[in-house]
Length: 406
Image (cartoon, rainbow, N blue to C red):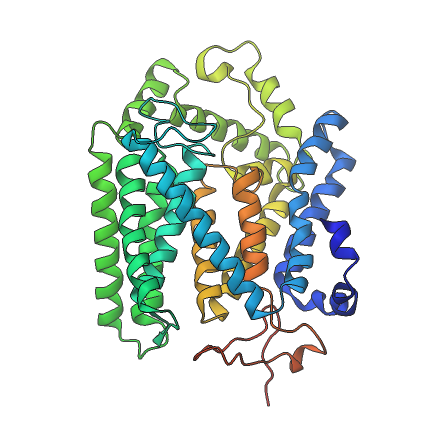
């Protein structure tokens, strides 16, 4: 893919201006740190290179931010993602109802009955994103302005919203999707009812409070459903603490404990890319139960980055997420709304999963945000990059470039 991009004349005519895009710079810095960490890596070189290769997706950011510089291409990407996620949602629901048995991961058991192509973590996260996207389209307003969507799209999106929420809260067993739903609902409420309007403290508290309560009640209902895996969190923690059982939540706690120990030993630059597996095996040697489980993944991207790159790498990773969020919020259109939604969900989900390392979630971050945050033009010096898109009432500023000041 990179080789194809390098053959595009548009890339070479715009590559000089990409240094002004902070998302591209942050992604490049993080990948460069991962490469440099090979110099002090404690893991075997083969294992280190294998893990480093999983982060090469970061280098797609500069190419995507240049090549997808036309609004039509970005809207096409939104449509393709929306349709594909909806298609998978329908298959997931029919699988759960027993009407179909489609997908390589489907199995007729409570956990895998709704699976299609991905497991519950990925499917739950993507379904929550779909619910957020569909709700935005169904409401028809964003940042105080009316969206240019037809009545048919709004009606169908309303139906997709209901179906996606039912899938996440009832049909699927993934806890990640259920946990990110309330924050996405709060984000949608802010973008729809507060942003771009006269902000009053009382109104803000009311809107965000209602969103938090509704989302919290939904998750609370699921958490008290005895058939839900979210209801098992407490018992999994107790089983880990009292009997050292390797439960899902208990293993995460164990891996977090190990990660904190590794960070305390090498706090500044870490132990190098791919070192977690080697060091975790050393810590698990001679242990039983959860303490004896081996893994190369602490199931927390923040801990994983800090283990490998120390505080320096953690700051670089946080800067990448912040720049994606910041530039998404600078775009008061669908591109910015959807990019901000996934950035928020991704940042929260990384507290219990190593999503940048994982293939589907990490590539979704790079491709979704890389395409949607691509400016309409990357030419000239920074102060000439202020643009207006006459697509309805949309107004955008080239991301990563500060607006001119007269």
